[in-house]
Each structure stands twice: as C-alpha cells, then as structure tokens.
Length: 182
Image 1 (cartoon, rainbow, N blue to C red):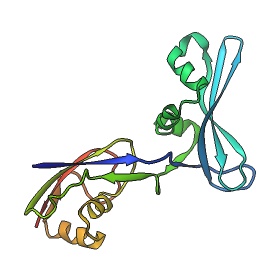
Image 2 (image 1 turned 90 degrees about the vertical axis):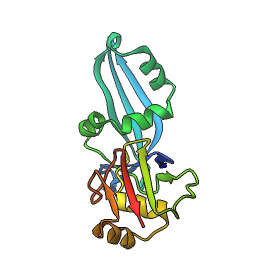
Image 3 (image 1 turned 30 degrees about the vertical axis):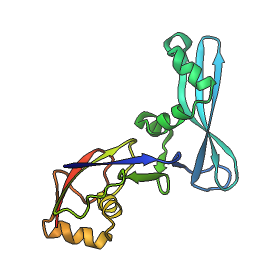
C-alpha cells in the first residue's frame, strides 16, 4: 500500500535580497501590491518589508504593460491584495530572476503524513508530493516522516534499504517516491 505525504507551506517564505537602507538581507512579504497606471501603460509591484529596519522594497510584477494585455482577473487580484497571488508570484521563477531574489523556506513548511501509522511494516512505499516548490532535503523529509535521525536515514541509503528513482542527496522541490525496507 502506498502512503502519501505532502510538503505544505505554512506561511510565506522570507525573501532574500539586500536592503538598500540597512544592508540586511531578509524581507517579508506583507501581501500588498502597488499598481500604477500611466496613460495606457501599467506597472505593478509586490511590496516587501525589511525585517531589520522596516523599509519597503518593491518587487516588479508587471512593467510597462498595456492595460488591455493584462487579464482582468489578475488586475482584480492585484487591487484586492490577494494573498494567494502573493504566494504564487514569489514562487514564479520569472519574478525571482527579474528582481534578483531568492526564497528562504526555513520554518515556513510542514510535512503532512496524514497520520501514517503503517511505519512498522517490513516494506514501506511512500509518495511525497509538494504543494509548492519548496526546496527540501529528502533525507530530512524521510527522517521527519519516519521518526528516524538523519544519520540513520543516511545509513539506510548506504545499505540499500532505502531506495528511490531520484537522487536522495541534495535538495528536491518536486514529487518523488521511495521504498524503505526494514
């Protein structure tokens, strides 16, 4: 039987970018947008606050777009300061590259094993699904989900008792499956 685990965000990640006022490198998104129209051209920014000094920085979402080329539902979500749109835009690689930012997911996610009480079986097949693109070490997920130490998980990998089609070293942000043999 296949167990299903889900890596879920619990809050918005911290934005890593240098503050021009105090040289701090951490910002938090407060979910507010600024939209500016200049004749038929539209600019939109996501506002983020420095965690050290509270200074506001703008992350470019739309730049010099013709108003007619912007979907009306996107414009409504920008005007309504939609928190779902904030999460979606922070994870967008185009927005990250354009604004030269990275995301820090420490303490911003949790592993939902849906009360998996079948961890005492001989063979455990688990499918891990990511609700958002959160880069996490698979060893950490497996250790947390199975109630093992990371060193124990590393030992199981070396012994061939923990196998997966993906490489379990490094970080992953995409779905994967693994099999644990005891």
